[in-house]
Structures are given as structure tokens and as C-alpha cells.
Image (tube, rainbow, N blue to C red; front, side, top):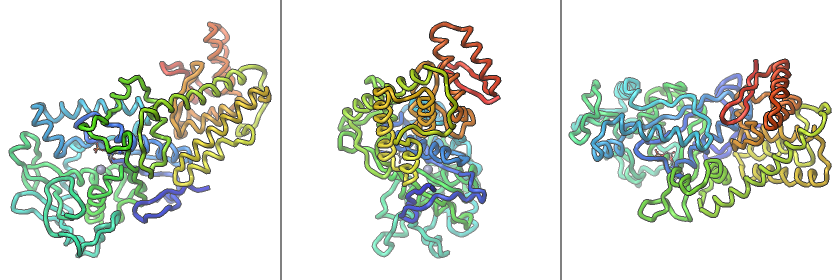
Length: 489
Ligand code: AMP
Ligand code: ZN
């Protein structure tokens, strides 16, 4: 069955079909962090959502190129650099490093490319030049270059593709230099901001004079540079629909004359205890604040993944405590399955054999194909846990069935990314990673689990012998600080 996703562009649920004629390659761009502070838990909801989309596409067999930009020059950053009297690179470097650490804590896969805006100034300038040549951008008396919405619309282009705008009721024709503005004041927006005294030494030379790029043009330039003039998927939080994404479309289509993005996905916002997060309300949390309270990245990831991406999510401390309990239930079941899997000789089983009426992989896939219906996905997981526990309690589960069950879990977990580690075996991989193929071979799983038990019992002779057996089957086993990992020879 095919994957269906809600496309903000068509405001409807559509079959996901990549532009690639072979139906395999997918280009995906997620608007990344503005590195002026530690990312908060709302930001993390959106980034974990992006990770889920990538993991699920890989699970479905697509070859994804995942690009996430780093916004390292814009209005808020410049203000902070001025206040803290540091250099731009030193200031943004600190938060960029923290961002990548947090990404790991939440077990998000690293994007394949993470371009920085400050390293794409030439691409940004050439995009602006194209827009000027095409007559949809102009340099104003203040020295800044603006995008002309009127000229763009005059060429028959549509401004307001993501958000329906009623131009008759709006004050059009004004100009905004700020990167963020309300739709009521739809106005020409800045592509290049002329150097101002308050920018300090943050400026670059350009054919339009010294200055710096606007935020919106950064994403148009970096996404097209990495993925081409037309690509498959663009993601971000719902607050980015207007003006950021609408302006990205106008700049990109205005320059190339081609459609910019096929599918737009937007994640709904996160509230904390029912309220919009704000420092003054005391309900503002960075990931680090929650870790300091004793919660783990895994628990936070689980909680962020419990709600459907198009629903506003109410984040609560009770919810986090609940995440601990839910994960313990899964871990307990997996622990028992591993115990049974290592118990007796392994009869041959079908690689894709599923255990019991709760067909985990099929049910989970059916749920996720339906616009990433994660609630139904979790229902499939917990139905399966219940079924497994029942069969274990009744002593009705054979070792081979336990191995198949673990293989099924491994596949699902390549999407969920709950890096549980029991018995020293790392059951955490991406389906895009060929190393996860071993999950399809129950005999290999059995050997890996047996080796972990042998190591635990300090039976290194047996552990080494198993390493040899795995090698003969074409697998190299490596011990990493996170657990054992397999590599295809
Ligand atoms: P920023 O670092 O401000 O550019 O934001 C990074 C991402 O976080 C963007 O995709 C925003 O849409 C998203 N975001 C910001 N606030 C929230 C929130 N409260 N809930 C969910 N996503 C958010
Ligand atoms: Zn962006």
C-alpha cells in the first residue's frame, strides 16, 4: 500500500509519489534551527517529526537525501551578538554544537547535509541577481533589495499558495525589512538588507552593496543548491507557513519559473500544560532543562512521538512520567522475548514470519501509511506487547517465534528510534542502513543474542566462536560503547 500524506499546498491528503521516475530517490528539506539559543521542546517536536518522516520513508524503501539548514545569520542572531559582544561565528558555534548534541540525545538521524547560511552567500547573491533580472526584485532607496509581490503576481504567478490571501482586503504594496510579519501586512520583503550601523561587522560585499541576506532567501538558496530547483518534500513547523514558506516559494519559482516543492508538510505546535510556551509564564523548557529534571532523551522522544503531527500537542510533566511507564512495558516484553529466543535450538523459520494475530509490521505500516497516523501505530505496538505477554505467560511462544517477534520489533523500531539496549545488543538502526538486513535472518539474530549472553557470562571463548560463525554468514560484529553492531562484509 502507498503512503498518503497531507500536503499543505493542496490542503488535502495525497498519495506520496517522488519526482524520481524510478520512484526511489526522495529529496527532503527541513527548516533547521536559528542558532541564537538552545532549542526548546517545541522546536524539538518539529525536528523529531522531521526525523520520523525520514525514517518512515526509508522504512518504505525510499532513498532519502535529508537536508537541514542552520540559520546562522538573521535579525535575532545579530541582536544577540551585539548584546553579548562576541563574534558571529563564536556565538552561533556554541548553539550549533548544542543543537547537534541534542539531536543525538533524541536519537534523531543526522541529516545528510546541514548547510550554514553564512557559507552560501554567493548562491544567495546569484539567486537575488536572477530575481532582479526577471524583474521581480528591485533595489530601494534605502539600499536594500526587495521582492516585489505586485510584479510577481503581474507575471501570472500565485502569491498565497500555502495560505489563501485576500489581496482586496489587505494593505499591499508596503515594504518590510523584518524577517517576520503578519499576513495582514502582506508586503514586499527584503532579500538583501543593506548594511546598517547596528549590524557591526556582520556584512558581506555584493553587487547591491554591503549587507546581509534576509532569512527567507537563505532557505530558497540552500534547498535548491542541495536538492535542485524542484524537489519532493519541504517540512517545518506550522508557524513557518506564512511568511517564511510562502516567500520561499515566491523567490524560488520567481527565479526558476519551475514548481519549487511537490509536498509541503507542516507540524502543529506544542503547548506546555495547555499554554503557549513563554519564559515569563515559567513554562519554557529546553531539552537540557528536562534532562536536568532527570528525564531521558528516549522518554522525551517517546512523548513527542505520541501525538499525530497535525494535532496541537499538549506537553505535560505527567505525560513524561507516563512515557517512562509505557517504555518500561515495551522493554519488559522485549527482555522476555530475548530470554526465550536464546533458550533452545532454533528451528528454521520464515524470515518474515509474524507471530500471533497481532501482526505488528503490517498493522503499524497500515497506520503510518495513513498520513503518519502514529496513534494507530502505537495501538499496533501495544496490542502486540499484550499478545506477546499473554503467549509468554501461557508458555506458548517458541524460541523461533520469539526471534521472529524481535525481528518484527527491530523493523518497527527503525522508524520509532527508541534505542533500547538490552543484553548489550543495539537494536537501533535505520532501514536505510544495510546493516539492518540482519533482522531478516533469525539465525543471525539468535547468534547475536547468544554472543551477548556468552559475554555477560564471561565465556569469551564461546563469544569468539560466535563471531567466527557470524563472519562465515557474511557479518562482522563490532562492539561499540552503545552495544554490539553488525556490518555486512
Ligand atoms: P527556529 O529555531 O525558531 O527557526 O524554529 C525551528 C523550528 O521549530 C521551526 O520549524 C518552527 O516552526 C518550530 N517551532 C517553533 N516553536 C514551536 C512550537 N511551540 N511547537 C512546535 N514547533 C515549533
Ligand atoms: Zn527555512
